[in-house]
Image (cartoon, rainbow, N blue to C red; front, top):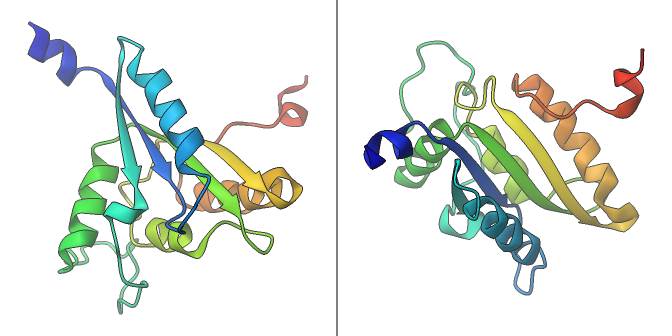
Length: 157
């Protein structure tokens, strides 16, 4: 019975969006992860990009290409599987030069159908409190057919 409950739980993955030495992102990511773990109805997972050292995307076909063969890189395969197993995501990202970190954008770019129709939220920090990196990530999430939160201005009747 417990196995059935675990199988039916919503999987939320918290993604640590920086690999930099001395990074701040792991602090809020671990806190969010712990808050999610404390809930009985969520299978929380922490996906640290340090554990997924992917090369820069250089494939001839994009991840959105129908029928494309699986990627041969073992780290990319593990990353893609982790994204596929998740129902939603919390991206914790710095703001570098008006956008998210290159390592996070690269990790996002390796995957396409596995992101589709999944919930996403953002936590950011840095210049302008990270708002500009979240702005870019929201646009990327929409392109990936994810479901980012809707801003208040769009919710008004």
